[in-house]
Image 1 (cartoon, rainbow, N blue to C red):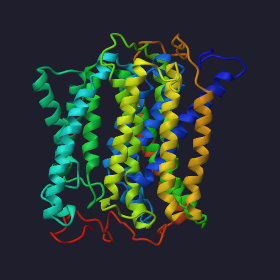
Image 2 (image 1 turned 180 degrees about the vertical axis):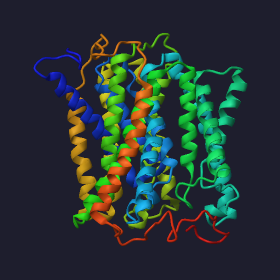
Image 3 (image 1 turned 90 degrees about the vertical axis):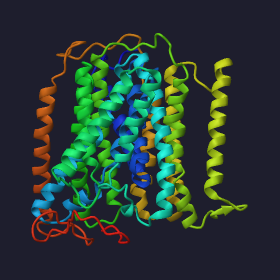
Length: 536
């Protein structure tokens, strides 16, 4: 087969365009669904879908072999940004107050960058690391999961008994994830003590966690910088994560991972600011639809284009990754389980509340809470998956494709359509015509992705020739990318501020509460609510 960088009569352009579109649509679908499920858990879906699509469409058999690893890495990397608060920033762009509108777009660019940059870093790791370093992440990640679970049980039980609002808890500190960041340090350090060694994965995670603490303490308690008071300030911790990772990759001499981080971050910043602009322009037409879903899916589409460009650039310049020595063979099914079953379970389990509130399912069945039945069902699914993996290793099952490309396609489509259906089942209880802009568009895009993932991938045992001006092993132009990032942020802020002012002037964009960040009319506050009072 021809590689995706070869062809005649313009085939190179057609393949490049279509494969970028499929990756972009994969992230757009995930982000459209993520808007219904929310936060870190919801953000796992777009990361997993885009990373898996990029691996499958890369034309590199070594990446297709790692589709499950790409999916797991994408899910974890993109989940980090889900801790940041951004709805009030979007509200700033609706305010009609010139300084606040400009601040809103600038902040959206920053938030988009901080969300996408760690995601880009994560999806780049399976593309460049040898098997020893890549599979070395599983033990520290599992230790973090254990510490977080134990902490959530302890803290959740205490808060449930002693406080009515999360703001009343003594653990409430600028509504940030400081406890989780501390848990990473405890888990990874504890594992290193037990094993009496530090490895690549542990060092990366410690750089990210320590970076979180340094940036948070300096920016928020130290300098008093609040992006959206009184909302949470996890954005500051994300600054530290990106900074910590940047230092780590510089020390490890992995400039192409740094480049992927910057590139996806740049597109993420553009995507968040531009999507907010698209929403405002759509609202100005007077048409009634779910314009916030337009924002979410547009952001996903633009962000997905950044993921595609970063991954396909890596595909042209990085050497082949090998699976030798074949250490930790258990990590393949673990990664597949996380990318498909884990992401689906963590999101779909949230449907219970909607079904009970809509009175389509009773809250208890035979005296047991609906959640217990659902958890039991998922335990059976997990046990069945483990059993089938063990059987397949002894005696290959006919339903499992014989090549890694086919296995990757199966995993991608299983995750895609499981979540498309889980999302529809969630929303079907209160479906309105406005939902067609979300579930209807997602359905069409999922069909396009299905066709693309099944027909566009090509496999070659030869690494594609580098594009003109880029040689394998050469260093990326990180300085130029960084300068482009700054200039693009300034240009986006100015352009979108001008367009919003031209359409709305001093008039707020909607009839909801107007959020003003600056001046005598400012209704932002850094005060923490007193015990017993709801959060403003």
